[in-house]
Length: 391
Image (cartoon, rainbow, N blue to C red; front, side, top):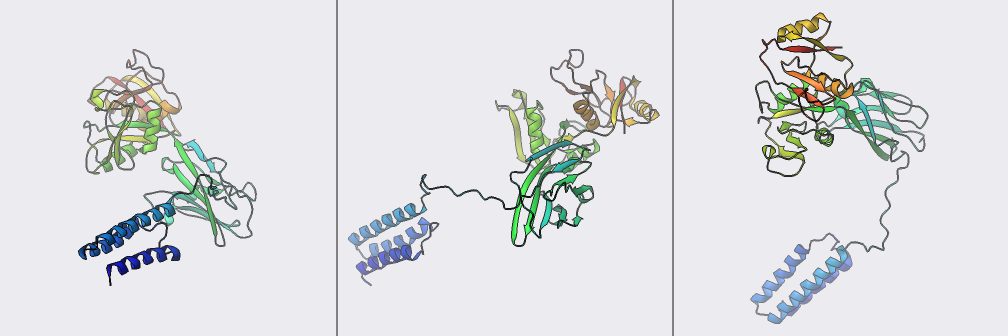
């Protein structure tokens, strides 16, 4: 085929492709360029210089056509209207529900209309879990079936015929997260999402053996032993906005390592900004401290005065029908009951701490409220009282 015939064939291919829809808006400019360039190089080999110029013009025109086809709609063109749900009320009555551990809550899901036959399914959206264990309850409007660890504490409110709201009783720390109310009617399927936030407090926790001694698994276990769980990034961020300033990095629930800084200082990194400092996701066998999260408790913390050794403190609490308090229980008392005591006392993990809600010079000298720590003294030292917990 002659050079002129090749160019004519190429032009015909491009024109026919656009007219027949072969080139969609998403067709890659690179693909067209490769085709045209292939022809051009063949023609260069044939010495057809003038024909090569026509090839280049063809490539430019093709590029212009594709750019015009893929350009966004003009501002005057009306944007697509957001999808309106047919049966479920959106946004829901509350996009977020907040409650402490132990309380009962209702996650709202209201129908606009009542289909003749339908199914409502409530699911907890958990990234680390997939499958049937995410389902909480399924109802056809007349009967319901419960699933998973949330099922025994779940029910539908049914305040009226259009009410598909979920009730959860005796909230636990791990209940926080995002929930989906899904309505299924024949082939129609629509959902609304509600967040449940457990009200609580984040506290840094360190091994009795010193700084940066926990693997991820050990950090997770340490928090659970102190009536808590590893904090989420969202919980740590909220704690930072409320004033948490801590210079040691700790594990979070998602496997990242972070720490919150209110007042930037050289000892806490070279960055000059406040906020959450993150090391990102780390090897779970590496060693750091932990950030734990806890919430209100059903029992109460009280102080016994004295100069006890650790063993004597344990016996003194037991004599009162109680036990030495856990770190999380002392933080919960400080946060939810505004517990304030300027006396160091033993806790069950062997540490000595005291809660301050009304900062004063003789009680640690720090200007902010918080739970002060005196570390892990010698358990034989007869210097401290005891913080007991009565459930």
